[in-house]
Amino acid sequence: MLRARRFLQVELLYAVTLSTIMIFLGFLPVSSFDDVFMKETGLLPYIDFRPGYPPVGKLAYHFLYNLFSRTSVYSFSAFFFNLSALLLLGTALYLCISKLQPRRAFTLALLFMMMPSVIYFSVTHAHADTLAVAAMLFALYFIDNPWVCGALCGVGTLTKFYPASLLLPLLIYYKGIKKKVSLLYSFMFVVLLLSIPFLLADPLMYLSVAISHTLRGPSESIFSLIDGYYGHTGFLHPTFDATIYSWQFAAVYNQSSYDHFRYLWKIPALPYISLGLQMIFMITISWIAKKRQDQKESMMFISLAIFSYFAFSTFYNPIIHLIQVPFLVLATLNWDNRAQIGMIFAFETVNIVHSLVWFTPIFLYTGTQLPLALAVVLRTILYVAVFLNFAKRRTA
Image (tube, rainbow, N blue to C red; front, side, top):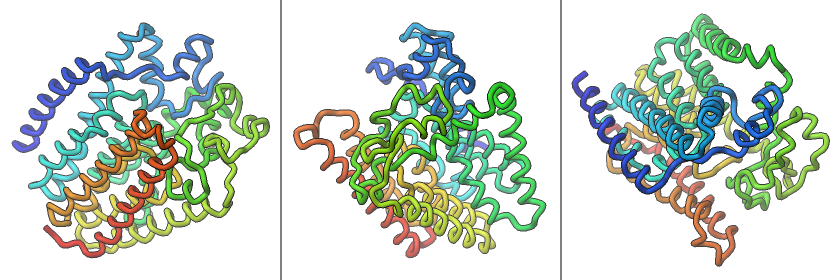
């Protein structure tokens, strides 16, 4: 309890310092194009317009923009909302590490929160990945209670869709049909409960939010490089598609090999290879977690299973770093301390390179393809190193 109180005190001091620096430098969130579009046109989210994120992760920013349409006021309100989410994520990570390796909890949780990419992508963007990851980590922390786990996975899934991936490892991990049913029941109950207003208003538009993600192609992954696609996430995203159902959009908007949002694979087998690898690794690692007698080891393997979900995805980008690093930290807690921190710093270094390609003109003289491909290849090498080193890990 004393350690937790000390961490919260340091976390609060960190928040004050960070907010002072970020506001002084002008690193504040800007409103997203869809919030501006909906306000200007009077369209309602999930009824007249299909946002890119589910409601828990989207409506907070939408409401803030409607309340504070002046850009400066919105930016400040969104900044402090994001900062609160980062503090929540840091607390969740601290609690999970404390359950597994108490001596490392303070250092690793604070190290994560102080990473430049984590700071930038968590507080300066109008997306709710930070909240989604926090929900997943809290679910892991309450792994003894499948009801709580399911509810937290439900909240996380309606924030961003990927927290649903935690259900597979948990279903394999839990022994006995009662726990498995409890997990699924609480998950579905929370999802349906929070979705009632939108299901009553227009269930097809609400369903389209999820289906539209299946139309997307790769984004800066090793699979996209193999297929010959080097584009950034979000290029050539048509505005009109969000006012119609996803299947209507698919019928009128032709696929192409240069458009992430309606991508035509040159090698059609690649997305299935990606999905197959995700399932194989997640199921295998989760099965190992189930066989472990020690819950700490099981939680580490479940974290590795979630890490593998992102490692074998067709979708990389710098924001993925914010999502996957907490699970990398948890999965490698039984590595040597220096080896673990070294791997974390290696991922951060590669992500900084990747981010520079995104946000600065430093590489424009070579074109974006070469440095972007280099960042993806380096990230993939680190993924391979994690799995190879995990087999040789030793308890610290």
